[in-house]
Length: 455
Image 1: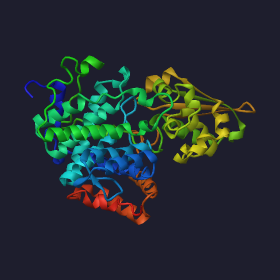
Image 2 (image 1 turned 90 degrees about the vertical axis):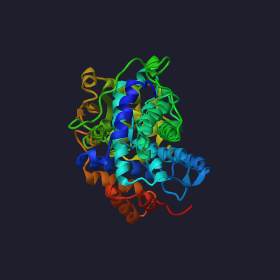
Image 3 (image 1 turned 90 degrees about the horizontal axis):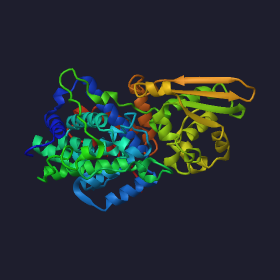
Image 4 (image 1 turned 30 degrees about the vertical axis):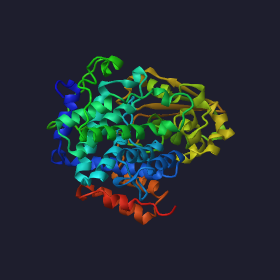
């Protein structure tokens, strides 16, 4: 590029020069935790209908040496492999998150694994690419507030996926810049994906963005060029969302942003994590039949995302239910625990849950809004039929980077999810391969261990 955007240049310079040897041991370890968590989510969602649809579409493009489709023997076109795996990894809404409109940087892992399985990249290359993708994702999301303008946060996934795939391909600064430009220019997605009654697409949009990012890097690797100024140029991104400048990338002691992404302890929308913990504690104090009224005090963003309309009090799909704060709180107050089985159709239609939801109000607390996103606070108050008031407050849910899940908890989550489709011994073997990813010369053993036998 003759005169590239300053922001694009900054991304391209970082991605083209970062090396595994640059990464501190704790960052390498955390990257492996993210990969383990994300692959577990993918295996757990294997049988969901949107995942079946994505695999059927990808399977039309089988090609020797193509991208592995998780759980199968199929190898397909790189971009469709990224899509199929991305839908699986995202669909259960269990992968990590940057709260406050950032979305899920782990969606980029689908693009990176697709690129790595077509090139024979090593585990260390994958770890490097994942770390770089998280940095690009974080710096872009904190600079360009897409959702404030009605654009979906999957835009960050497309750009960061292009960066991660470019790292796997070993693109130089020039071609990496073109990959970024080719990801930015055609990939503005609409926020309507997450409004009203939610469709299957809510769980697939991240996989689609990973597909587009991987394809952008593939185009650049083959010599395709993109606009010099996709951000700053006439009718570029600045024209759509306003001017911004991304922060500098890691140098020396500067933090790698992967460590600030919050894992999910529960397979549910991120802003429901604190309410779930609070509801579990309240169930220990109040029987469901004794509840007169429930008030959920939360911050503005959570109310806007998962308690913004009447539809949230009567979800009809899995996608809507896992973005419904009243529904999730009602189910957990009833059960005393969380399990994503609450999103099954028969449970969503349960009249007893509807009756309890009608007793729930959700209110923004300005003090909690001021604490977010440094904290992810929630206070739930339950008034009983005899007039007693019970209250529980949560500030940092389990999995938040200030209340992190232990390695043992990450392993348990992975094994529980993988057990839905893999024998226990194979799931444990796959887990050990992933912990040793930095010693793997390629991903072939990983995809072989993840193979699901049967039809």
